[in-house]
Length: 235
Image: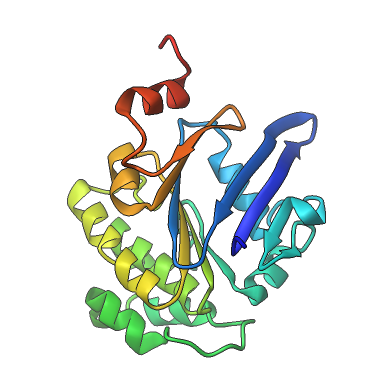
């Protein structure tokens, strides 16, 4: 049984339909990547899974239970944490205070604590008393990931974590993925960088215009097939 899955997931913003029958599945200890151009529906998919957008209960299932209609705080309490696009740190709080917020509302213990977050991202320990906004973009992204991990999630959703960051910084951030997996989280990454997605994921789903157009393991998918699924054949 999949740990987390969507079944025939649709999503609308008012009259605009953003997702059309999306089926994805995430197994225990797996990392899947969702790739696709801007406007493909990737962020809407993440918002639906995390409860920011509500759906019919069975369109999103976690450990066999329909969670599609639950609000975001209840989904987080069940063990699904989101690293939102754009980081969204609290500007008035220090790095450490931003991290501590992640533990709020979820009572289970687990691997992740301030100490283990600082082991994962040592620079955050050095900067822990600085305001979150005094950090570089990459360091802010580390805080956003750490904040999500503080809830000791079973599933970590990462929405465009490399956006706007230098390649060397992106590499540093993605180096954390094996440690996050080893500590017991399964991961969904939304990523515009196809190479990065292929390097980190066990399986890849490509989306275009609100639909899944291709899925498979990185070794199964040719560059041409990805290109066609990403942009549409004929581009």
